[in-house]
Length: 78
Image (cartoon, rainbow, N blue to C red):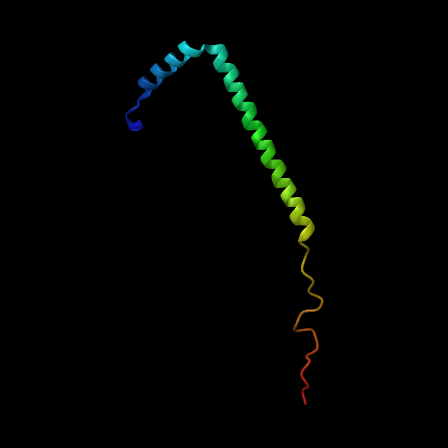
């Protein structure tokens, strides 16, 4: 259905939208949309940083000083 839309049809739609809303309203709409996207990205980055900080506190490097191979066996070899 949308594959039949060509550049001429898109231009006609753009002219109709400009006639209805005007350039000033479209400009403010575009800037509002841009600021909303910027705010969304900032919130996502903040959430990622908080998650990284929370995981960073919980995860620590593995301690390989006493591995099961290094620990003395409880069985008597004898």
